[in-house]
Amino acid sequence: QCSTALVSGTLRANRVGLVTPRIASQVSRLQVASPSAVFQGCRTFASRKPGKPQPRKIEVVLRHDVEGHGFAGELLNVRAGFARNYLIPQKFATYATADRKKEMVSAEALALAAEIAEKKKTAARIEKLSKIALTFQRHCPVGSVPRNSVPERLIIEKLEQEDFILPGAAKLVEFEALKSLGAHKVMMKVDEFEEPISFEVNVVKR
Image (cartoon, rainbow, N blue to C red; front, side, top):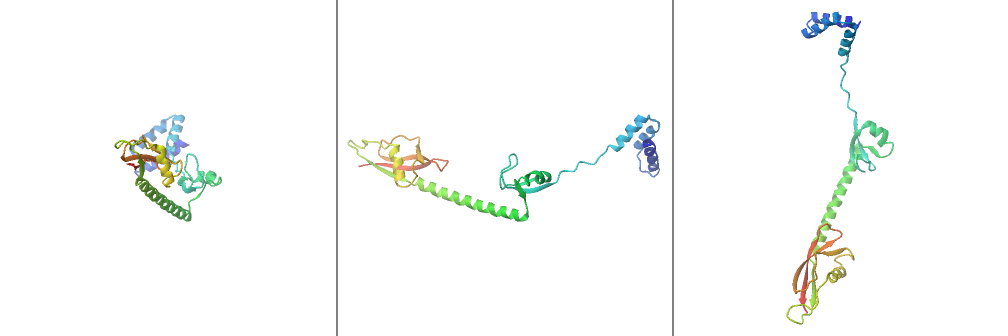
């Protein structure tokens, strides 16, 4: 029945010029083919299927960190089924409505403003520390050679006493006790900053 319908339909289409010579030749062979060959030919014509539709995606805002997907407050584009069946029921996310997006923009603007203010505050603090100029007096019984050196302990104590740093919040980098008069550049590592800060320590004759 498949062969008869296929051949009959093809011959009618051929009379009005809708069948190419190649297809007509293939149909002619089907008229003398075995039943299994005819069945296989029907399967070939019927095997063409439309492409699989892509899953629909929607936007959600994460309320909590979700491993492998994102962090709290992040806007994600996920499959609708994943959002509907997992993220939303488990309260891991909410739908990204227009109002929710506006809230996110406002929150991001506030966070950016806070970040900028913090950077300015940090820059001002670094500038203040870099302008430090400590002075230590030393007795020089012979010429200009101090009897006592200036160790790290005394420099840190003076920085803390003058409220330049908090107790225990800084240490000197690659420092050796100062044993000569004059101005010395000293490097200090403060816990709140990534890079060391350079400042001046003066040793003068008493």
